[in-house]
Length: 231
Ligand SMILES: NC(=O)c1ccc[n+]([C@@H]2O[C@H](COP(=O)([O-])OP(=O)(O)OC[C@H]3O[C@@H](n4cnc5c(N)ncnc54)[C@H](OP(=O)(O)O)[C@@H]3O)[C@@H](O)[C@H]2O)c1
Image (cartoon, rainbow, N blue to C red):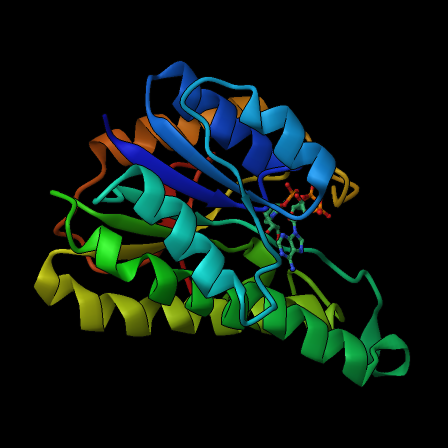
């Protein structure tokens, strides 16, 4: 049975990704922070929750322990955990926000990849998907499409660089890494122009990953626009 680990799976997009893959018969490892989410997910057949915070060092042991108890190989890791500070411009942005968002979106994803790596190495076509954002695109920011959301944009941009570094290092072992903007989703962090049900986006994600060209260079993929967008 193929297996997937999704971080930030207690609500929003992550929860819907877990739902879709469970519906498709995969073994699912949702990483969540709240004990209520662990309890609810434990009752789902084929679902093995990991209770952890991706910004804490012990997340690596938590991932390794839960995976080792259930599987040798992990086919798909989705680094989705994240939050946003909608503060704007220099005046509103705090150092604490900058550091917190970098820790979750970039360092947290790094930790999860490191913990999952021994299991990814044993899968046939392993893949890591880092859930990025249009706000992390330097070229779109430079064109003035978005403005002033420093902490989140910088953290997602750093995560994009993480994707490229990881892909360069791991593709020679057959592990591919991609960045993906999931669309404007109607979740708790929704932007004012959010227009997409996260379950619909999760279905699209699963379909796209099934048919993606594994030989393409690591890029930033716009899921709903179905195209690669500029970094
Ligand atoms: N919504 C959009 O339009 C949109 C657009 C582009 C990109 N994204 C990205 O998509 C991803 C999912 O966002 P969403 O819209 O589904 O947001 P959401 O509904 O707020 O869900 C975020 C999830 O991440 C978890 N999380 C946050 N910090 C964490 C940490 N330190 N350790 C572990 N889990 C953590 C949260 O856990 P708790 O429930 O415990 O708080 C929650 O389950 C994020 O990376 C976001 O930046 C979203």
